[in-house]
Each structure stands twice: as C-alpha cells, then as structure tokens.
Image 1 (tube, rainbow, N blue to C red):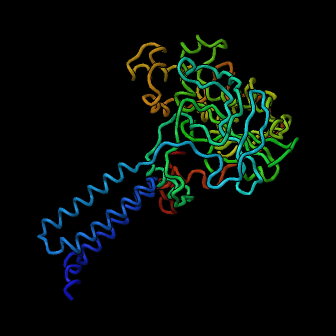
Image 2: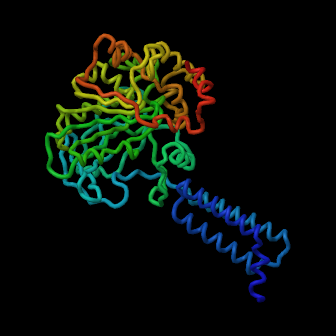
Image 3: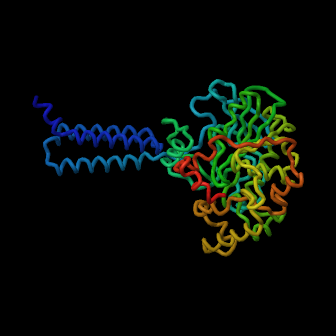
Length: 446
C-alpha cells in the first residue's frame, strides 16, 4: 500500500534498533538523574516528533538528511536534559501523603508543630534548630545554642545536610542500585537535597498523641565524618516510634567544617580547643534533648545513644569525653569500634591535626584564619578528605577512647557493639573475592 512504503523506508530495522536503544538510554538518564516531569513530557514529544518526521516527511530524503535528523534529535534531547535538571528542594518530613499537622508542642525555645505519618500513628518534627548557624564568624567555633523564636515553628521539612561535596544525581542513583540495592523508580524524588553550613538542626519521631516517660534513642549518622544526612531512610525513626520509642537525630558539622584544627582557632576559643566542632555539635544536641525531650513524651533520664560507622566512632568519643557525662545512659555502636591503639581509628593527635592545617593554608594561598574563614564553603568543601578525624585536643578528649577504656573510664552504663551486615558493600562494589584471589586481596592488609 502506498501509505506504508514511507514507513518501511523511513524506519529500517537498524534505525528501529538504534531508536529503541536511544530511548532506553534517554529514559535511564531522566530517571537516574532525577529530572523533572516536564523533561519526561518533552522527551516523549521529541521522540514522537522524530518518528513522525522520519516516517511521514523525511522517509524518502537522502541519507545526509536522515543523519541530520538524528543529530537534531540528540541536540533537542540534550537541551531537554539541561532545562529539566532537578531543582534544589528541602526534603519533606513525611514522604508522600501525610496525615496532617500535629498539635502544638512547647519547647524551651518556642512552640512547634510537626507532621503526622499517613496512618496518623507517628508524629515527625523535622528541622528544629538546636544551635545558631555556624556561618561567618561562627565558622570553626564552638556551637552556640539557638535563639528562641516567635510564633509556631512548622517543623515539616528537614534542614539542609551539613556542607559536603555532592555526587551528580546519576552517580548517587547508581550507588543506591549497585551498593545498597534499595533504589526505587519514582517521580516524587526529582529534586536535589540541599547542603549548607547552616545545618545544626535536629529531628524527632514520637508516637502520636499525649505520651510521656518513653525511652529515647539519639542517633548519630555515619559517612566517614565527611558525608551523610539525617533524613536517609535507614536513619529515620518511624519504625521505633511505632514501638513506643522517641527517636532523635541531628545534623552536625562534617569534614573541614567540623574537624579542622588550628592553633589560631585554639587561641580564639575560651576553652582552648580546636578540631572537634562536629563532636561539640553532637554534645549540644544531647544537651537540647535533656532540656526539651519531655515535651515530646521522652524521658531525659532514659537516653540511649546510637550510631553507625562514623557515627559509632563519634559515640566512642562521647562515651569517653568529660563533656558528655550524664547526657545518656546506654549506647549502641554499629560497624565501628575501638579496635586498635595505633593508628587510632577515626582519631588523630593534636600535632597531626595542626600539621594538616598548615598544608590547608598552603593549598589555598592564605596565611591567616580570617582569610581561610572568608573563603566560600563550596570552595573548601573538597578538603573533607583531609579533615575527617576527631582530634585529641585536651578538652573534648584528653586521650583516645582506646586509652580511656583501657583505664575503665567511660560515661555509659551499658554498651552493645556489632557490625552491620553488608556494611562495606558500597566500598567494595567493584571488587570480588573468591577462593582463587582472596589471599592476594588481603595480603597487603595483614
């Protein structure tokens, strides 16, 4: 039939195969890159227009025209990817449909409302400030308690993650697929989570309604003291709240912002300390819990401190820091523990910390702490790999946790230690050991 001839001429088998592969690649980039819904609509429209033009108008055109049509399709789709990039948006306290706003609760700093889960059984309060934003002159200083606020604080979105370098959304999605095996195809996450120095906020999950005297779990997230955020699905407290536990977690300063140590900073400090700002953030958050958790139904005399990976390393420090004494009762350390005296895992000496600071000054061509403090956060965020160890500073820590535990010095009454299954999966996702190569894999470790 005459009308079908252009279709056969316009989309030969090879062209059909190439188009299918192109569409699959395009849709994969749109999904993994968290592109917005308009991007999907425009991409489908572009593919439909290409098929129509190739089969109805350009079917009999010379090969050069048909090749140009492919180049045009690629260019149009590239523009669609650019204009549909995911925006930066705060993460909601409850993903998807929620059960509405909670009643007003009264903290010592002001009134607050949260969000109910869809079934109404758990109340979530996200983004409650416990410290002033550590920006400007407060960068690299001990945290200052938050100021009271007027009115009612709507705690319905998580605060930004602490300042850190962020992977491209496609890389983050591939990590979820390959490393964690928990990736979900969705159009509800087509945004990028914000990162900021202004991140000292905490989040609370509690059973719905008027409750009191409940046990409290305070959780410190992991991430090598370089990355991480409190809203990660495994860190949310909804599951435990359904079992009658009040769960708290917090943002704390990471990388160079949380663990940079310098003599000039020690001279500024009224306590002569430097290098442990992230740890001091956690201590202030624990003090906030002591002062305010009763408003959420929790018992300040029954606080368990828990953490995973770097969060567990922080717990080791909090268990042996004189500043944290009396702020918690028991601890749960997951996938990081006090394992060796030298080198002390996640800890460093004051001298090593100061040496790393001198190298940082040199890299940025500055000579004073004022000049370094004036640099944009985004410019120095890459320094996190050089400053992600807790410092034995003589104030927050007088010695390593290993040394304190060896003397029987610790703050907790009981401790549960263990390692999570598949903890290292993301770190070894491209490495495989078997009976033939295992010795080669571990020889240089032992």
